[in-house]
Amino acid sequence: MKQLPERQEVPESLTWDLGLIYPDDAAWEADFAEVGALADQAAAFQGKLGASASELYQGVVALHAAFRRLEKVYVYASMKSDQDTNNNHYLGLDARAGSLATSVSTKLSFCDPEIIAIDDATLADFFVSEPRLKDYSHFFDNLRQQKAHVLDANSEALVNAATEVFGASRSTFNVLNNSDLEFPLVQDEDGQTVQLSNGLYGTLIESGDRDVRQDAFTGLYSVYDQFQNTLAQTLSGEIKSHNYLAQVHHYPNARAAAMSQNNVPEVVYDTLIEQVNSHLDLLHRYVALRKRILGVDTLHMYDMYVPLTGEPPLSYDFAAAKVEAKKALSILGDDYLSHVDEIFNNRYIDVVENKGKRGGAYSGGSYDTAPYELLNWQDNVSNLYTLIHETGHSVHSWYTRHNQPYQYGDYPIFLAEIASTTNENLLTEYLLKTQTDPQVRAYLLNYYLDGFKGTVYRQTQFAEFEHFLHTADAAGQPLTAEALNQKYGALNAHYYGDAVVSDPEISLEWSRIPHFYMDYYVYQYATGFAAASSLSAKITSEGQPAVDKYLTYLKSGSSAYPIEIMQKAGVDMTKPDYLEAAFAVFAERLTELEQLLGQ
Image (cartoon, rainbow, N blue to C red; front, side, top):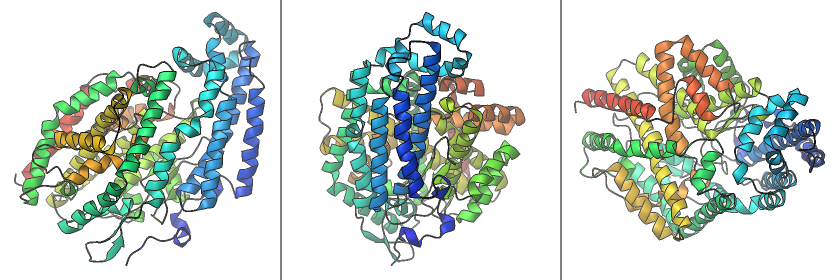
């Protein structure tokens, strides 16, 4: 029987080296204490930020020094916990870091109201008398455009003090989903008994053996079915927090509150949903093709991920995947590849799944750390795409942190997903150009269509459901498991059409999606994929001029509003054009696959 290894059984070369952040926990403890001292230094400016240009400058510098050190402390504890959520010591460090973050945020919550309270004329005079403030001009602009939504200092302090309370539902879900849920034993394609997990599920659901993927599907959801009422409560608690925080900050709704943080107009969200719904015929056409090729009387949701061309003609272990990723990204130039090499060759990546390890994948770190990646590696094309996706985030982080000061040394998620999915699109372009075998080509086209389905269609479906969650709660409708199952099942049936059976298990899918706890997050996957489609097409067709614009975007961090940064890169995301272009590519590749498969 195959079982997941314990953390200490994983080869060191396949683990990330968090010793590059702190050599040991004692060093972390020292910085933990230092954060408190830095926060006290910044807190000494309370009531003084509007007194003079010098006080404002020194206060903002002190504020950022405290948060900069806090972020380093926080990510170390968080990643240590993520690598093994059964490790109580690091769960404790993570909890302490979270409490410290709450304490510091509460202590320094006076800063935003004080800066916003400075009148425009006085601030203009400050910029003249203290030229170094110009380094923070966009920081001030971004903060002051939130003027109507920032409370007085005492009220902001009360809200910040409750950060852990507002995050309790998310924390409960994460521990339950990653550590406490016991999934059943199932058989893989080789007839071996394996312990089902969220990570392994992604592989088994693609199996060419229909019994294997059906058993994985029913086995996984049998567990979520047992906990659906609990999970409905955790999700409901999270949504209530979003709505409450939007209300107390005088936003019309939670979506407006979430999108205003990046100054992204709500029309971007509405345009996405409108465009996707108007192109559902393409998804229905693809689903119908899937049913014909698989030759089944009834198509089920567990049939939606198996490659239509049978066994994948391409498979990569981690070492081979790194080589292929570099070939695909070579179009971005030697400088970009040098940073890929740094990430691949210095143990910045935690590669394989182990007992208790957080599921999924992410790129993490802070301004003063390496751009780390968490993976749960399986030897397939999907994981090659995951690697190149997270590396897109990581190189974006490297460029931002090395070209922007701390105050602009991060980027909003809206921009982040564009960088990662541009990498995915460049990989697709590379593979389609280098693979001429009809079987391989058909597999790649199928993989692209599945990726588009999962990133544009599925994430927009999630976005619609997420908007329902918030609007229903705001209207006083209880978010019970029954209500969530009914809504999600109906929405899933609407998206996938009549060619697929609405399996009762799929109505529970909402219960296992961590992104629903992240406050209007998922739409950015879909917009990011579509924008990336435009950027990758420009890079492929225009060459160096497009690469230069792209690298400028990667280096911009948060030095301007994301819509403006993307407009400079050549994509206007307030208009539907970039989405229509993406659907045109989907239609073109769907047609080619139909022809290759004789359909």
